[in-house]
Image (cartoon, rainbow, N blue to C red):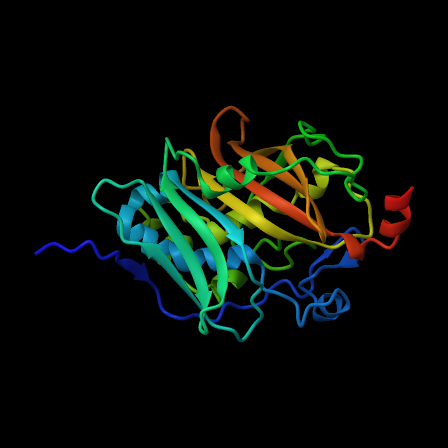
Length: 306
């Protein structure tokens, strides 16, 4: 008996944990600090967006197995902030056999949307959700905080990165992988015991790929005016020749691929390409929309009027 009823896979409600309350950059605290968040008009410091990515991994591994870790792409637009104590559930479409792209989303326990996303399997990911969103961007009328940036601007140097189990990831991410694994919503021995993983190496969790790709970003030297507070509005993580491994050296090259503006924010979209240590083999990519809050920059009105 056949039905045309759409079916979905979902995970349990989880309470993601806040681990960025002590985050610092450019000499000030971030939006994840409660006092800073309240100063900017938010009720509390939000949990970092990619924290929610972990809840999708068991669902996508159920659909695509080992291939998901090697060639998977998760492309997300963040819709509403989550604070510690709130519960979140992840959903994906139940795909037909052979499907290499599904719609995904997350909701709070009361149905409030958290993020919308596409999940796909390479090498041909097609148009991801962020491909579609970028295609609709309009050129900004006038940038103030980002006035010194331009599309095509590259980071000033190749960045050498790695993630060891007990390595503190610095002021942007003041915790280690092992500390994250104590709080991560979905854990697996593959993240800590290489002998249990198909590749014989411990795998960096999807949400921690964001940390690997971003913790050294200051070295890119993009001239964003300060003090200004930002947040992640859109994020895509794509495995090209994955997975990425714990204790492995990588090289990152960055490029600004778009600039945009909304009523409240100025945004710069950065594509970070993660290579092997030689810089010859592309392993993964991250596309990140850094949305800087206009009212967090003290001289915004003055410079905008100039």
